[in-house]
Length: 205
Image 1 (cartoon, rainbow, N blue to C red):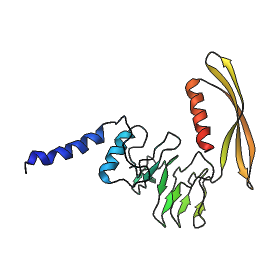
Image 2: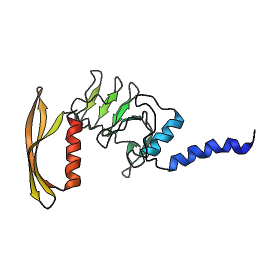
Image 3: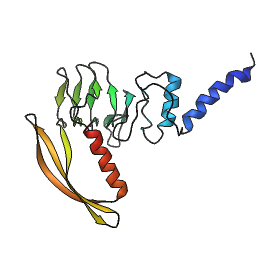
Image 4: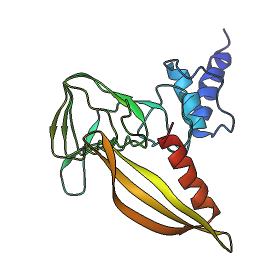
């Protein structure tokens, strides 16, 4: 076989790794990706997924529902000389973690209360952010944030010049009931307002 024909597929995969695809790959959203499919999906997700992560499925929807990624167990050292996970922000991602793993200083926060976003048994979390993550009975915890919270728009007024004045209740679940703990009023331009509406829409799905 011509050696140049063997090089072509390699070049195609390599080019995908550095390119950004504008159209979402035609791969089922519940399929576990092959290595080649991971390259294709990651090219589509350029700028939407952290470089130290690999997609597990083709299920990205938006910035508040980022889809499934492969757990990265690689560790490094931060500027203080402390051991850290290279991938330390799984916020709005879904991830499957090997049973028995100890995790520290990782952000797993989700937009929707009681999100079943972490798979894995007998996990130990130390100083992690698990806001809105549904806890498994086999997990153990040492510090961190493990609550369920949500935002509720209580007033929304067009104040002109492309701005909307919005009051948002910040609520925390206590004994199965969400209670308001703070109310914030802010002026939003069109872009930030659209982001707020999308965030609340994902929260309420």
